Length: 343
Ligand SMILES: [Mg+2]
Image (cartoon, rainbow, N blue to C red; front, top):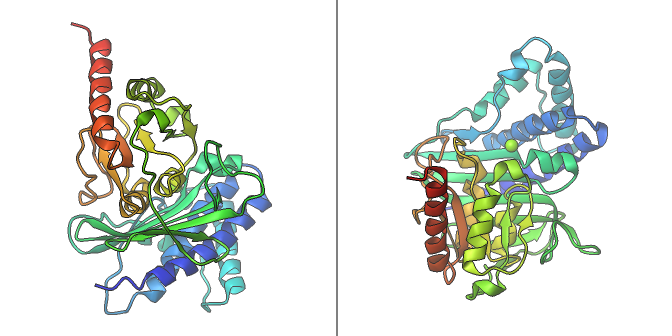
């Protein structure tokens, strides 16, 4: 099977980048994010649809739908999205077309597919890490392709991530080129290139095998992570370095090129993981030689629809550290459960 869609993805990313920047520059309140979320989704889906042969069916599982935009009071934002999308298409010049407001609403709903175990489905988070986006920190545009329930292609555009290693810094290091585009195709490895365009470089996860030398990534937002649990896992493992907290799947990209050794994700109870939050990131890590599993050591299953439906968290690291990481994760979870319901 050929995955020539890679080129189209780059085009999409370029278009997205334009709209994201114009969105950020235009306003400082919450509305630009909404405009950017919807706009990014429409433009990515537009490019993918235009480049999909007419004989092939198009299916996309994406985060946003038009429900909120169809409500009373949403006229202004719909107007803004329509304007921004049409302007971006004209500026980009690849396609000659115009979206009406109704066309915008239906284009957003192109992302309503349920995915599943058969056929091919694009999986998109048009802006992953909304809070990071608002803060001017890390966020990502995350696109993956599912084929018969498996992720076969992933692209992560991280406009605020430095192209070089971030080391132990939160975000980009000064003087470095900013804007990294990670990509991975199943069986072909993972690469990073500059978002502005540069030759792609093969990447691989770090080769640290002693946790004492490891550092770990977790969510920037405390609400997204059980920090008592991740802290206890790190301590049991003997990790010395403080956690590196960054927003979005930029964490998967940073891990894949060896900026850190471990990624721990333990959302609070009741949270349901969505496939667009992990599909692109996980293939970038696995194709860079890493391992991504749930807290029981099972591979992530992207074939069940829009949700991953895991029991507990997600962990990612290299092959050397995974056995000891899994062991302490299970110990820490057991202790936490015992503390929560002492007999
Ligand atoms: Mg999002």
